[in-house]
Length: 237
Image (tube, rainbow, N blue to C red; front, side, top):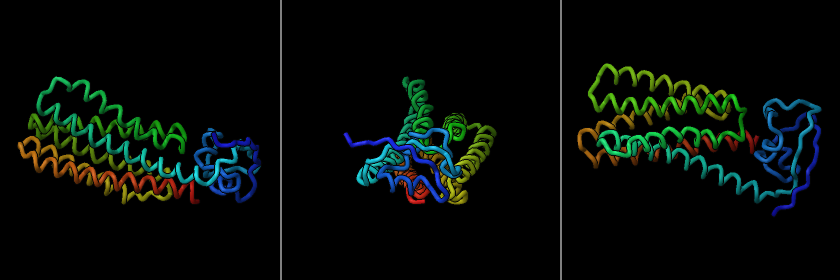
């Protein structure tokens, strides 16, 4: 177990979580977890912070790698279970209810990657918007299966409105996130999901798998982008 010495630091002018992490040989997430409710963007001079020092630079490096792994895993789970849901729904499989229940839990897993960095209210909003995206995806699948064009148009409109809200929320949380970049990434994801559904319904399984892999790669780029933003905001600021 790494040596940890608890220190009470009184915030001085110019202090940031990144500088304090370097000074006390710890990590930004460790300081955040030890001081719930403290806004890292608005450190007030005179605030008392509890810091567990002595973690060392290797710990910081390991934490960055783990953060990226967690981010990638959560988005991989998202695309994987979306495909599982599509297959169960289109093929009328008996596991439909169980798969849908699991799919609806994935938004919480994605939000969990961010939870140690941001206030509870923002995390609740992020979870809600991700859950809305997942629910709209399920409804789009149902509409496409039943060839209900009116409902498809409605779900698609709500789908892209949800993407706009997600991009706006994330870009408001982190200056390193561009609203335009995020909206473009989410839009690509939705376009590929729709093409994937169409290919599956047409029985073009090779094309459906190709689109799935394309969407998977695109979401890994998104995961890396989101990770880099967190590193810039909390590790390198």
